[in-house]
Length: 279
Image 1 (spheres, helix red, strand yellow):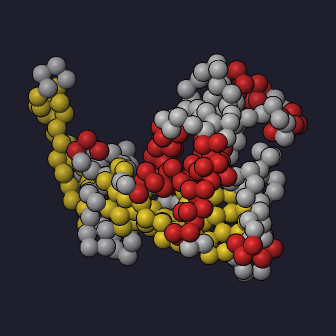
Image 2: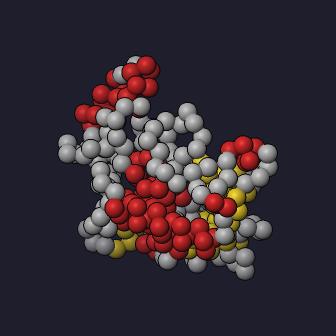
Image 3: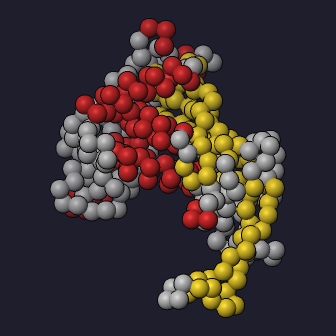
């Protein structure tokens, strides 16, 4: 796979779809932000079906990758979105550059996107920014094969001065407890990702497979999950040999089925490319 030289989505060069499962290790609370009739903080639902929004997962993923990429001691510099720094080369993380792009008209923006001057760091290319759409999309996560067992847990407001419970500030919230089939299914889709961004996917996979937390009330031990990638489908004309599949083959119903263990090994190779890359 060659790292794309253009920064637009005018051409479709590759697509990777990872079918994933989150193994639920503890209760999870993802609230709606609005009080319900039965609880102060109900679990978010689509109709009557509980789920976890893809945006919530994406936020955790981005934070994880930002922290890991900035701590590796190698590879191109990755910015933290919305944290302005004058010495940041990434246009999304440099306020002056961002204003220049936002003030440009449509024709000027198209020209900037195709120029060598325009630059986004690998994290902003992978997860997106206010200047350009993300290469990676994350679907909502749905509980696999069952509706989760929901329980209400109590909480109290804490006085920060005395560090004791304040009177009359008791509340409750809804928690999805882990069961026998304690997993949530979702998918990750990458389009036009280059070797550098795929190297970041390896960082994300390695860290989240060890375990991470989603939702709120993490300090109470809620939200513990582990990532498991179950299947990888793709097309990518830049690969060589039997791994090469084109968009035309995909449109004709033929696409690659990358064995998970071999795909992970390939990601590790691309991670080496990330470490060698410069800003």
